[in-house]
Image (cartoon, rainbow, N blue to C red):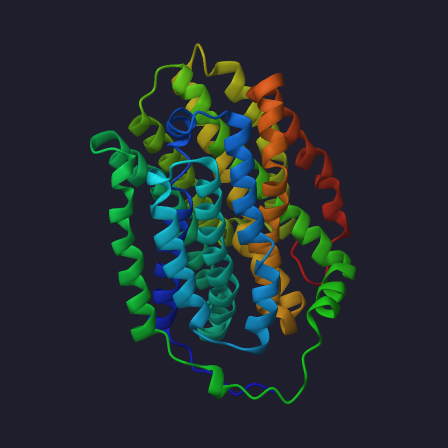
Length: 393
């Protein structure tokens, strides 16, 4: 049994701020991808393969760190997550070759793997029971909002001073790390684990054997795929159209900012339409919106951006209700589930990112995105297998 931890608003706000800052760094590379391709004399396929390494280190490590977090609740992972993320993501602009870029992305991504499951598990501990979904929505929205602001910061630095000045941005991450030390209480000694937790592999097996968890992981993966495809590959289209680096950064910022609003507003959508309908809207919208975007981006760019931003918004409608539903379904694995829903979902897409880059290079970006967004549209029928006693229709 765990001792009762009183709700702590200051701690949840600090954890949300840390989520904002860390995810800010993790999206630095997106708008400067074309610049790195030129600087390092490489290709779109090669640079996206490097991004795959980052997603592997960040996302697929999160269940492991989540398992540790369920058994050993320490700020250690929060602190070093912020240090690794802020330091190594911020120096990507000064790397001399692809190998160094791969190392920086890998270690920076490992910082994300440290922070996310531990922070998400602590959010479940420090949140008020009556407002748990809202506070989780704020926490997750802060991550998406931070991820949206990262491209604006990196593109602005690159545009006005050059990408070699990106290391100066490390200051924000280190200051946030000090805030975690001050405002997030130590809680490891307040927990009494009278019941021994199962080993990691047994925990993973238990989670993946559960049909509801498999469906929720599928929903999270499709959300990640839509967001990643649109934000990673559209900068190459815009570069060909003559957009500047800072203009690309601003467009990605708006896309991800609207996505963050989708994350925040998902509880309200659920309250009005129910869980299943909200999931359906999230899964089925990206395919027609992708078709509309590519049908209009050359000749009607203003209209195309509306479809582009709507794709980001609807993809993220499932995020917070997905996380809370998963943690309620298997409450004994809060942090490891956070690693699966918030980490593995991105990792599964990240594994394919190099392959996506090859497809985009030889078949075209429009072919890639339209064909991939058709998959969640078709798979939305699996939502009927979610347990009716746990979700609203």
